[in-house]
Image (tube, rainbow, N blue to C red; front, top):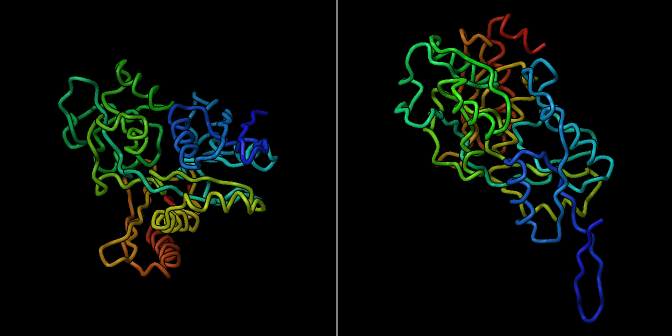
Length: 317
């Protein structure tokens, strides 16, 4: 085990570093390094390969969904091999793994999606893309939203980290791709592409938010992480995840949601579900006092489900 030695009043203290678990993608490593800097205590980044990283030849919706990006981290946390796990919260299931808690949520990055086209292309919006253009994405949500607004476009599967997808785009495997602005910003690539308005592409629940999970019984770690928790972001993410949980959604269901504070300090929630083929969509928008925002989110989810066609809801079973 790595240790760091500090000298205090001529007494030598051996302090083991905190172990931060993370996936091994460049984006995940950048996020873990950010958390390590914020902690400002001796720390060690522990890289774990997740099932979602290993499976690259099939859509996640076919092999288990969001939990594939977190299971190995959850297992390592529960076993005590790491002290905390750094997650993109949008990759987390709506119900946390047993014995874990989301102890801190960092201030949210840009929650928009961005349209990326090859170098030299002049297209800067989905509306400008020519009929029949190929959009590379592995996201059921993004694919359904594109099919709903531009059914003339062709969706092609695009798996892999940001660098892999950009390389596939440059190789001509698609005419455009869609990536989260938050990830691009954290990788120093925030100048790529053009932002997509939420009227066209509402983000995934918790998109742009980083969460730090620890063991539920580790009170000392929870206290150490508490100063990193951004209350406004945490409130909004809790609302979006309540909406998702009430829908009982997974990677097999195209779901979008965004909660944000308005100028009156109320929380506005926009939620949407779509059919996988994009032919149908149900969207709602409402506002609530923060004290009743979770109830608002659950009520909106029930209202959307009641307004959806029965075959749309089959994917939720």
